Amino acid sequence: VQLVESGGGLVQAGGSLGLNCAASGKFSSIDAIGWYRQAPGKQRELVAIFSSTSSTNYADSVKGRFTISRDNAKNTVSLQMNGLKPEDTAVYLCYARVRESWNRIAAYWGQGTQVTVSS
Image (cartoon, rainbow, N blue to C red; front, side, top):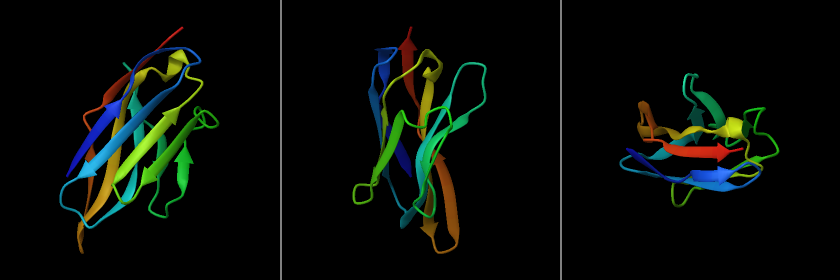
């Protein structure tokens, strides 16, 4: 299973960016899919995710500013980031937990894409 991210880049504070992640490979369904981020010297943290029940969870720090969406037919997940702040600067990683067979569920990570917000 591969997760290929696109988007990200450099933006000024208050600006917007969009991220996209496409999942491909051998799996029967996606159990959960979303985004984490990791800033230098900090632990990886959840940004936004679709859970196994298809409900969405957001980090408190991004609620009201970020919106996660998915296209089940294309196995993609997107993250629209508005009102970006310098503290949003991090490597953003796509995460997916997929069902590979009737008795196997596995988790995968994308390679990460850099988001830098200048003040």
